[in-house]
Length: 389
Ligand code: 2IP
Ligand code: CA
Ligand code: CA
Image (tube, rainbow, N blue to C red):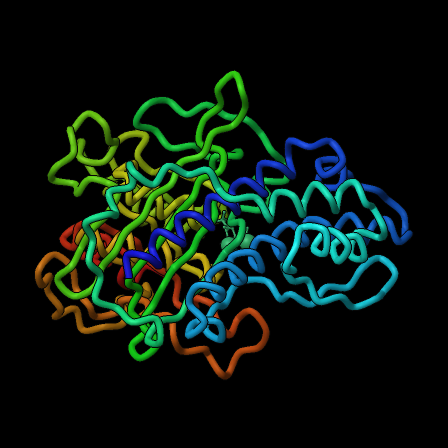
């Protein structure tokens, strides 16, 4: 299934192109950032466009993956629904059509007849991603998976608020970005339909750095399938120590700035100076753990969803770490120990909805989570949090 990984890297790059185009091209950018007041249809229309960028990206990924792997088409899920209501109250199903022209015509109906915006968007969707896959290191990979056993979770744009706001922040070497465009990510995860185990993940960061020609992205991937573990990111033990913030005195923990005060206070004594950190974007915080910019990401609430965690979770597992349900770990007897680098007890899975919940909460990571690379560190964090909230 190395072909699937290559395809996901390509579609994620296409998605990143669409995300960049929406900020770069004036007619699309206007729609993205414009806020109008008053109870007129424009207000809703502008609101719609923000969702449309997400819907279009998700449908494009679904279209491209379904075309190459028809066995997977009914098992490609994401944050968005493709049913869209335009400013006139008409319901339109957003799909990627056979030709760029047809897609533009369909998008124009959603964009209340704005041909310029629809044409620009359709052009980005139908363009082939110019991603040089020679440096991805995926060529020699043999992944023993069958498409009929797999499902996919997509978050077309994670940290949408940072994407819309668009602040351009610089992060110091080895430090994370607390907010800004860098926190916006395209997340694609593949899991086993039978067990819900995440086996393959792709993360694309459309706004990684800026050069004189504009924003440049970066991609990351990982595969964790039985004994086969491969990742575009070096394993922690192979990293030069000075490239990461994790590894100094005390632990480094990344959290949402809206995390509970009790959790912040419980973890502060474990952390070195300035190493209790805050950043936007659930996906970005997991990426910080993957890259060694933080030892763990702790979230005590059910405010993330399967599409946020599936892809990045596969990268953590590929590096010998994982992501657990916090509540489950806090309530377990604590007898589990690290086996072969990570524990399986409490690991998040991706195949079963919470049937008692409604809407998006069906697929929430309800018990909160901890993302980690080192199982001993996970246990220290859980030990510290037990009985504290
Ligand atoms: C959001 C986004 C938010 C995050 C939230 C996610 O996804 O990643 O940033 O909150 O949990 O569901 P926080 O930044 O406080 O961690 P989206 O942007 O896709 O809605
Ligand atoms: Ca998200
Ligand atoms: Ca999203």
